Image (cartoon, rainbow, N blue to C red; front, side, top):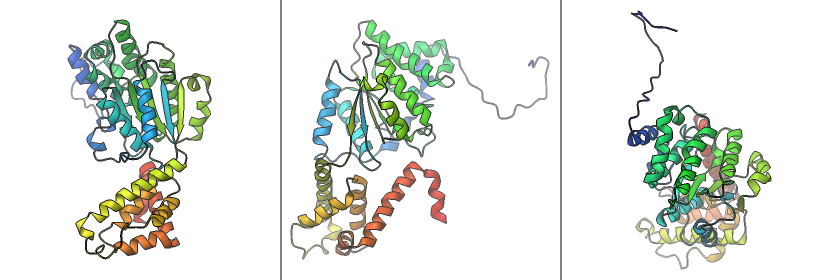
Length: 359
């Protein structure tokens, strides 16, 4: 199509892309336009997101941190899986914070089904590459060189090509140059919240492919629900040979951790001046240990249920002691809390269902 000697015409619904990149700094700035900033663990969208209570998950986090610090990891992927509400994202955030403090965090990406930037992989590898570039100037040079050669790489390339040219090859070039990459892991949380199940599997294969290179300097921490299509590829030799799996199934340790969360919540209530009058005549400890264990039992290993219970009991719009009694004795209240927990799941995993609340 030629526009020579044309005049008085209109272009509708056009997208114009400025691909003029003069130097490496321009290239990284250009890359930043195709980053899901809200997906990183320390973004504004993640502000005040739940994290592990400091007295819970101690052994699990210790094991993960030990793996992070291993210079020659036997398995390059640690895969945490468990049902919704089991605390995977809380653990992932705690892993990010610990690794960041130790100088071992390369990048993080938290999928979320409710965000158009975070419910697909269009910005997954550009976001990771941008964080890696910010963490290492030499690596930034290799990444910017790829973008300068072909700016379309950041917005119009397959995820395979993006991963290879923005992450794999720059990291290998860095190692081959004799430089050390201090940042050791990439955290990917909520892989199952990517709306395309086939792409979820493709991501796992790409990460495993990178680890076939003996000098690839990064490890991957992944967290997701154990969906069937993901479990089917866990047995794939390519993935299984480089992956350690951690299950968050309900265990005595889980029950003890939920008890700790509940006790901490009740301690906050006892120290809250709003409830000073209501609790003035209450004998201590409050509530008694058997009551806490009953709430633990009703939680069935789900931290989110325990959190919902604490919000209900401490609601300023209700009577504190009456709320606790309902949680312990009322089957109707138990079902209502389960429904509230289910609603939380629905709003997170199927945000388009929010409109049903109007019916």
